[in-house]
Length: 346
Image (cartoon, rainbow, N blue to C red; front, side, top):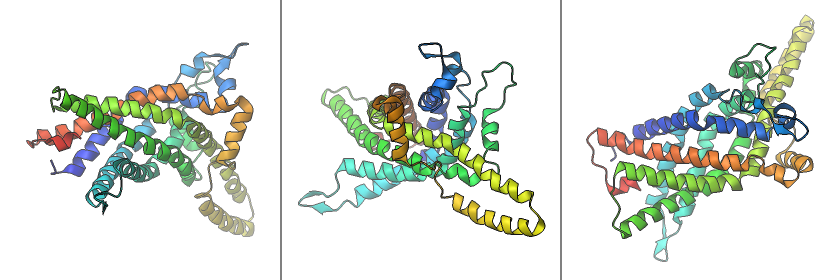
């Protein structure tokens, strides 16, 4: 099954991402609100800090930006993952009669490389999404606003600020995928071996999709719990990107009101500052400083806030994502009349 392999991967990855975004997005919104620094002020009420109704309103805010970016980013991820994994498998040097690179390491390297490519495409949408998820539309005395457009206005004068969360996103996703994919591949291989040994293997697309979904969901939930502290810090950094972009607008506004001579000098300076701001972190605080602040506020358990919800969300999301991806990829090839081999179901 080689013809149009890359096209199959892009289409299957995009379809899987679209399906998952629509189904599990509300859980992601609630998780973001749980991890935000304004959680108690915006989403709790009463003497016992009970969760208020506002926590569950507007749970699809920002979904449009994510769907638009997820389609190409997921295609890029799977294309890179499959390509790098294939290259490393085919050129794995021999050492003392065995492969030098073990399969788990190959899976980690392939998924890590794919994640770096995917994050470059996904970061702007992730920043918009998480800030849009925090837009308060629960007040009845104020008109509702489009959360995505409202968030994008804050980046209007400096759109490059949307990429300031790249390091934070990559720092969260790299350890997650490095843990998930080796476990996923191992669990999937063990289940198939077990079914082969018991004579229950059917080698159908449906069976492959279900085994993939179960393996991905199990591996994803474990990786999600382990990397929750990194995710909490990443959420704080992403949410601070909008505030940082708003602060960048002040120098431009000051330049507009200056005299002619001062304006030329100010604008020249702002061009330099804007170029520098592209690489500026989303927050002036480092990741370790943010982590220490969270521990000071809520103890170590604060670093795991939303961990259970993230594990459930990731189990559903990863299971659907990789299950639909694998089934769709094989289906597209079969639809062209190609016979898929057992290798295509691995």
